[in-house]
Structures are given as C-alpha cells and as structure tokens.
Length: 243
Image 1 (cartoon, rainbow, N blue to C red):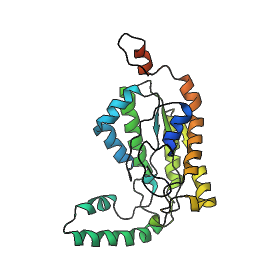
Image 2: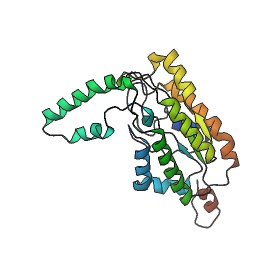
Image 3: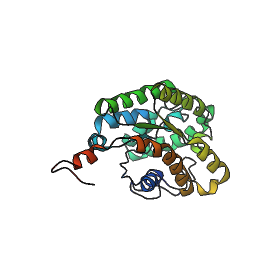
Image 4: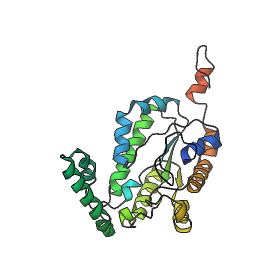
C-alpha cells in the first residue's frame, strides 16, 4: 500500500481501495503485500486464514493484481527473494548491490516476464475456482493492469499488452467484469510524473482517487444487483450480527 512517498497502512484513507469503500459506503478488507505476483495471491488464498474469514461476509471480491506478473524479470524472482537469507551480512549486501545494478539494465530486454500470461491466467482460474467453491453467489471483478515508468525495470513494459489481452480473454470466458487501470496510470505518469512515487511504480494520491473512480463505476450497478450479504440475512435472525 504505497503513496507518492512510501508505504502506508492498509487503512489509510488516501489509497484507492479505501476511497472506493468510502464512496460506496462499504467496509473494505484489503489483502496484499509488496511484490506479490498471481502465484503469491494463490498461496494467500490457500494459506491465509484472514481471507478465509472475510470471504463468507463479502459482497464482492475485487482482484487487483497481475501487474507484477507483467514486469520484465530477466533475473529469477526467486533469486531476489532469497537474498535476505544470505550470510554473512557483507555477502548479502554485495549480492543485493549486484542485483540492483544488473536488474534494470537486463530489464531493457523486456523478457522474460515475472510470470508468462499463460501462467497468470492459470492462477486467476485457480483463485476464481476456489472462491466459487466457497461462495458460488459471490461476484468477482478483475482489474486490468496499470502501466509504470520505473527505472528499476528499465522503463520497459513490453509485456503489458499480452498480459492484459490474456486477462481480458479469461475474464470474458468466465463472465468476470473488468475495470481498466491502464488509461489513468498512463496519463498520470505522462502528465504528472512529479506527483507519482519516484520509483515509477506506485502512485500519487490524485491517481489513487481517479483509480477509485474507475472501480466505483464498475461496482455501483453490480452491488445494486447483488442479493443481501450473509451478514444482512443473518441480522434478521434472533442473535444474528448487526452492521
């Protein structure tokens, strides 16, 4: 959860998921970590009991990931993730510095991606199937990926079109509505780079607000057509929870 200057808490009212909740009058449960790919999301779905606790009470699930999948990753992601375990400290720092020097230069190749579109779609389907198994009635909305202007990835995003196409095709085949983050982020990075995070990946607060507007537009009619949530139905029963 990042703004223009660094990380923020999950309940910060300036980041787009919480703005969506404010505008729609809904409580938001936000799950994610820095650098997660679709594979990490799948692991979270299967291993994080907080997600298990949230899904039975949800009115809608918004899948807003896959952006990391589309980034050039000529050095294996597993290599970066294992650097923290190296000892002694001097070796760890040496390897980290070498990774930081080589990654942006090698990224100019634009290939391979952190995850190929085919694998991303496989994980999207795993996530959808798991949610549907638990809550067949629960709507799912997919956010098509944003772009970036990051020197850490060589300012290259050649994998975006193929990834977006694969995601949109999967969503269409499974009747999953989509909202598109690309137009807003393209314009913000091009027209207001000074307001975005200097890392070229994360956004400024105006961008967060505009992205929230895109998501609200995609959710408003959907939420109006959704039956009462499990919490609303149980509130009518003696001893049921209230909101």
